[in-house]
Image 1: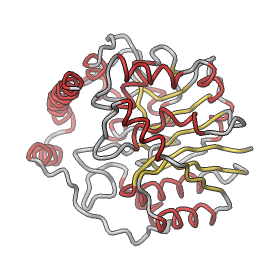
Image 2: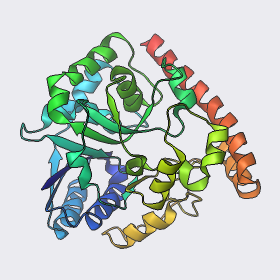
Image 3: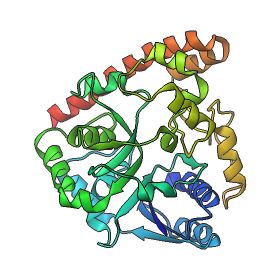
Image 4: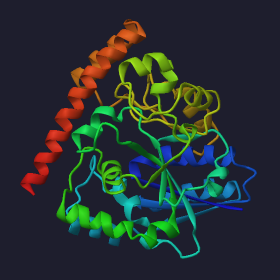
Length: 337
């Protein structure tokens, strides 16, 4: 049995991707063969050697895909960089660069820890859909800003299961190209928004345990529902089951911090530290978060001293303002273009 896994990242994220890979291999030892594909941007030869050494220690393989042509295609389409890099958008075009013998491909963000067996995804019934994803825990307001309806699902792009043959058969890469050329290029969450819009009603909802987001670790189902109350979300039992037995923990930024930041309040710090200690990056020196704007300082202070439910209500208001402003700015970039 072979598990094909895709990571995409730039040089800055090499330690975090490497630690995520360690967690993948540590918790999937029954999988005979794990083949890791890397869409890397500006990776140094030393970083490639270190990642290769780490993967080969577990008896698996890693392949660094050539990305220069892919980046040039994105530039020609007018797709902008995201946080200073093109890496985040690469996965939308990866099927153009895969061998024909690959049926399933599991994309995993580098800001993750895999803490369970994910091999069952190889055999998951995709219900004739090209990709499977987990719903986004904070997408209720955001989806309205990008033109989706209240009742539409909005998925998180941190983990994506590809049915590669179905994706190619239905020409989804071509449809994405047409969208960014003729409809809209700039989005707040570029790859995630485009996938949700272009593949509307064509995404298989997979179990939340495969992309457990911080919101559900910190807050109870009742607290979360009172604050966000999204339609067609996961049930309380589904969320609790995932919290008790997560498969993939997704770190996305919490209070302006990731688990690799010094003195981070992120709830997944213990998981990150555990696998960092098992990796070739065990001596990594954590640095303070770069997100030191006043709003994040206030948010962290309120988180420390307010009751959780009150803080959550404050967070929701500030987050929705942030979503509105970010989407407004990204829309203006399209007008300028």
